[in-house]
Amino acid sequence: MSLQAYKTAATRAESPREMEYRLFGQVTRALMHASTVDRSDITTRIDAIDWNRRLWSTLSTSCSEPSNAMPQALRAQIISLDLFIGRHSSAVMRGDGDFETLIDINRMVMQGLAPPAQAA
Image (cartoon, rainbow, N blue to C red; front, side):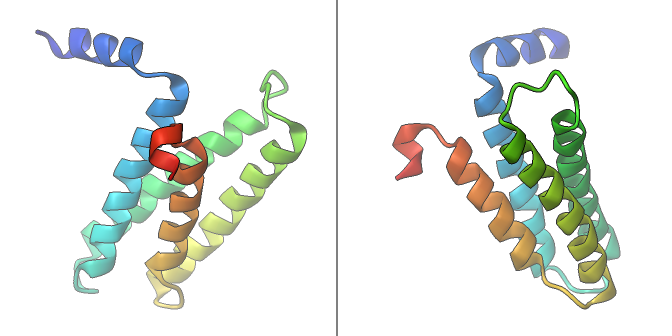
């Protein structure tokens, strides 16, 4: 099976919510791993933080679109979280913040996205 066929099949098998949940899980695992590596492993730390920033930036951009059907208040909260995550990510890289805050935020979002059986 070609990679494109696999991607197409995976997309059809997952709802957008399930896809977001899976992506948050992958990014959060990368952050968790990065939090355990030596501070000198800059590549691992930057890669995880950058991936998380790009995820949140994408969500924020989507929330700023007039065609986005989510409630305005939720969209505003996601945009605010994106701004906070950008600032906190910079603090983590300077050594003034911790990965746990980023991990906790992602976990809370995952709880909201989780299918009912996984939410408990």
